[in-house]
Length: 164
Ligand code: SF4
Image 1 (cartoon, rainbow, N blue to C red):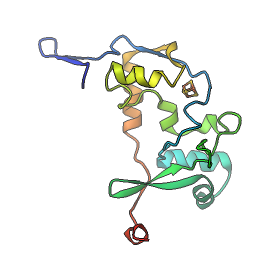
Image 2: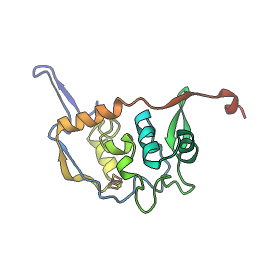
Image 3: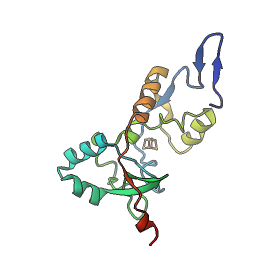
């Protein structure tokens, strides 16, 4: 990992966030609007949505979800509106308490924590990063591991449709 050091004498892995990182969401919605993006769902995420929306699974999937090609499979993701706003954006996140883990663990994702530059690049678009609550190294690690431990909902690619 660029910007990190593995000190063999101390047998400790040091990162740019060894002393923690500050983050408090200011609910500006910049990460949920304006640009296309994917919010991939796990079974737990979908179960929570079903409970919150009080709708059967097939309706939640058809109204609010879409399949996104990822490698050799398709992954279930939240839909976007035609203007790229998240399907659940309605003057703010309308399912905030039940939002998927991908949203809950932002910005503590491997890609954003790859190195200090990656963190700074993301922070340019998120006013919540670098200010507010201090997340200790162990807490950050826990959130990253929680995000990585998700099993995303996938299906086999329908190659017949891909030919059309
Ligand atoms: S861009 Fe950052 S501060 Fe704005 S809503 Fe997203 S996480 Fe919160």
